[in-house]
Image (tube, rainbow, N blue to C red; front, side, top):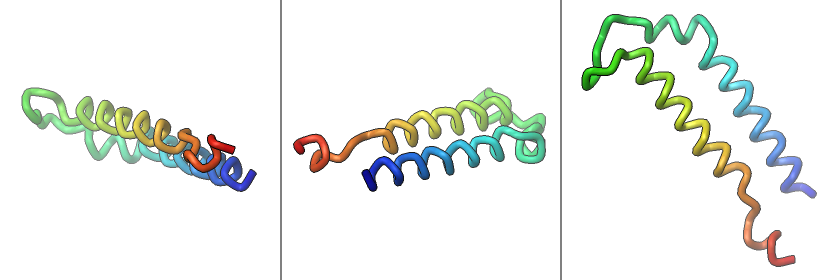
Length: 70
């Protein structure tokens, strides 16, 4: 039960972080005509943050072994 509350809180915080990172003021910081390994900085930021969110969602959604075995 407590694990579900923590999971919901973490996923909710991740959602809010996503709302901040994918909104105008932050995106405008990376909207420059700079290439990193031939990729525009804004695209690199978007895909790396997106990949990070996928990894964090997978990490936060896992159920600990101690709860699975009960």
